[in-house]
Length: 359
Ligand SMILES: *Cc1c(COP(=O)(O)O)cnc(C)c1O
Image (cartoon, rainbow, N blue to C red; front, side, top):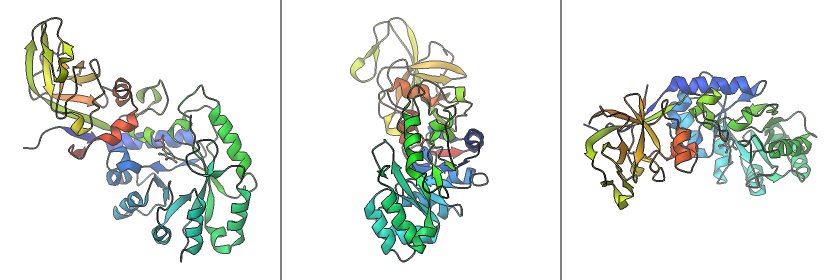
């Protein structure tokens, strides 16, 4: 019998969240961002779950784009990091992948390739990771437009926000202003600026294509707000069985380093999940979990294959009962906060040892 530590994936929640993204995107269309194995949910299954609604997908790299095709899906796929090798360019053309070009070496590959994919130009408006300088775009664009082949293949412009998760920041407005100024000479070309967080910024312009990722999976893209508070539904429930139960006496400790010591008699349980499954080791005492519909808390250090929970709030719980580590009762955003990280890292970090089960 396999261990019953599993990640249950709810395709209906993915569709619900995608529809919310479409609603919030207004006149922009939303491409479903499914990179990093669908944020840990399984890229092929996520692509399929959204196939009848999403007109386009967004991925980081070629391998991820290929997974969409291998699933038999024909939508265009935007490759957010562009080609990594010269040979990638022709393959993109054959497969209908749209690379986002961020550097001159990629444009050189494009000119030398035997066939030319539809492509986008990344504009750096202040994130300063990738992209052509916003104030030095014209030469490159005019050169691309001067050749009939690249002219018909250039779809438009992409930029990425650094601070859209922070509703207090004015930087998203500034980046939008720089972007608009940079691309205004070519109004016939398309524009794409917004990640999930941008969908929740009042009055934010999203132009032609938005790029929701994390929100599709039900986690919050906004600082200080949870996914459910934004109307999102958890797409993943990480679940593991209680495999032991004991009662600690006052003064007993639990786990490595004996960091947690019982102040009074405490019923406690051992759950078969740990950092070897991608549960964050930094989630310390007090991190929430749930069993039998009741909220409980972690105690002591997370080990590789197990962790300990205080069963004071669920004294009836026994070996075999299923514990939710995150999902619809315990938000992944909450667990991330306790582990001093973000839901993105937790969801993408669930390891291959954990089977994904699709409802
Ligand atoms: C990952 C990514 C997105 C999606 O971001 P979320 O915050 O997950 O919505 C959008 N655009 C680009 C360029 C990305 O790399």
